[in-house]
Length: 488
Ligand code: UDP
Image (cartoon, helix red, strand yellow):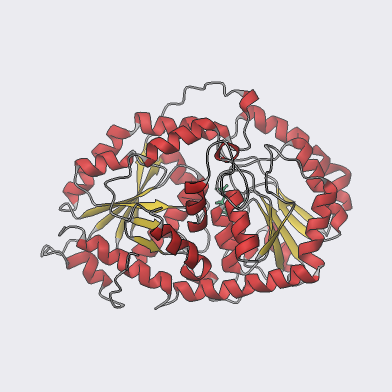
C-alpha cells in the first residue's frame, strides 16, 4: 500500500511558493483541465477553489461556452474572491452528424462528438496555452486534468509539466469497472455490463484516453476515507491506480454548507427556495436526474403519476438536458404540456416542478428536504451524503449503477427505486413502483433508518474536510507533492 506522507498544517503557502530550491518567490501555477460536461466541470472548479484557498494560483481551462456555463452555476461561493484565472479555448467545430437513433443509449450520445472534437481540434491550442503559462511562471507549473481527457498529457509531457489525474468517480466504481467485462456484468455486484453503461463509441474514446495517462504522477479522487476507506484501499492494492499515489480529497463543497446545521441560506431567494421554506422539516422529496440525462416521455408520465399517488410533498427538476438538440427541446416541451394542465392544479401546494436549472446544493441542505430521488451521478451522491439526505436510487448509465449499489448496499444511506440488477436499456419504472419506493423512503421504518444513516455520514463528511480531517490531510500531502515534483 502506498503511504501518503503528512506534512503539518500551515507551510502550504511556503510549499507552493518557495520550495524546490526556487528563490524567485514566484508562486506555483496549477493548470486545471476538466471534461466539458457539468458534472466534471463542477468538481474541478470546486477543486480549484480549495487549492486556491490554500495558496495556489489556478488556471482553469475550458471552452468559452463551458466556462460561462460553470461560472453561472456556482453555488455557495464567489469565484472572483479566489486566485482562479479562466483560460478560454475555442469551441471546436462540430460536424452536425446525425447520430443513429436506433442505437439510442440512455447515455446522452449527443455529447460524444464534442469530446472527440476537443481531442481532434484543440491540441495545438492547449500546447500554445501551456507554453505561455510555463514561460510566465518560470516553469513552476503543474497540471491536473480529468481522467477522461488523457490527450492533455501529450502537451504536459512536451513541456515537462508534472501532471496529476483527477478521477471524478467513486473508488467503488473504479474497482468494479476493472472487473466488469464488455458483454456481461462479470463479477460486479449489480450484473450490469459495460455495454449497458456506456455506448460503444464512448467506450472507445475512454479507452484511448486511459492509454495516455501513463506519465502522470498520481491520482486525485473526490471521495473521503470514512465513505470508501475499504474501496480506496482495495483500489490501491489491485493496482486500479497503477501503483501511483492516490489522494482522496472530497468532499469539495464549500465549508459554509457544513457549518450551518442546514439553516443558512446561501443563495438569493428563488421561488423554489421560498416554496421549501413553507414546507415541514424533512418532508420534501427532491427529484432530479442531473445535468445531462433525460427520461422518455412515457417515463416522465409514469414518474409524475407515481409521485402524485405517493401523497408525499416533492420538488421535481424537469429540465431539458445540457446540449440537447432543438428538435429534442421542442418534443420535450410539448410532452410536458400536461404539467400545466390538470396535473399542476391537482398538485398545487404539494408538488413543485422546476423547469430550469435548480440550486441543488441549497435545496439539499434545506431543512425541509427529507429525501432525494437521484440518478446517482457522483456529484449528486456526494452532495446528498454531505447534506445528510437519504436517497432513492434510479441509475441510468455510466458509473451510476455502481454508485447506486454503493449507496444502498454498502452505505445503507438509500433504497433502490426498483431492483437494478440486470437492468435493461431504457428499463421502464411504473407509477406503482415509484409510489411504493417513495413511501418506502419517506414514511416507512426502514426509510427512517436509512435517513438516520445519511445523517451520520454527513457528520463524517464534515469531519473529513475540517482541519486535521482525512481529506484535509490528503490535500496537504497533495500540495506538498506538487511543490516537490520539480525536484524529481
Ligand atoms: N445540478 C444543479 N441543478 C440542476 C441539475 C444539476 O445544481 O438543476 C448540479 C448538481 O448539484 C451536481 C451536478 O449538477 O453538482 C450534476 O452532476 P452529477 O454528477 O450529479 O450528474 P451528471 O449531471 O454528471 O449526470
